[in-house]
Image 1: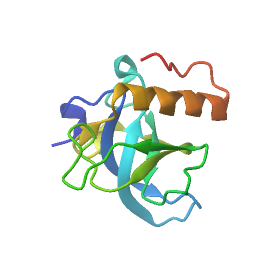
Image 2: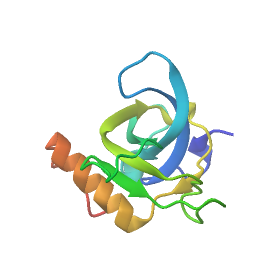
Image 3: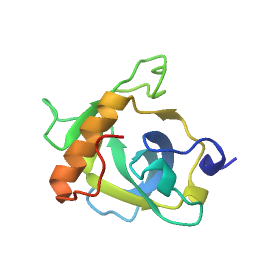
Length: 130
């Protein structure tokens, strides 16, 4: 079942092969936080997200937003390891290519991610109020 058929929306966490941050061609499946507004998600059109990484700076860098996790799986995100949304690591994907939705980023954390992505990219069209 594709993620597109499972409530894909702003803030969804989905897994998808992504080239690493250095641009290596080797693509490893990793979580992505979807940043495209829900009403703009169209199955055959590219959408944007940020990659999630378990490589966390100590303390987290300004480009990293920690995501809620629990060793048993966080109730919202379903993440089991300490990780961050890497706000300067944008990923473009097509909804039909995604794995099923695994979880969702809580609203306050999502607002921090959107705000940081907007600051990094100086993009006023990224809506931080959703």
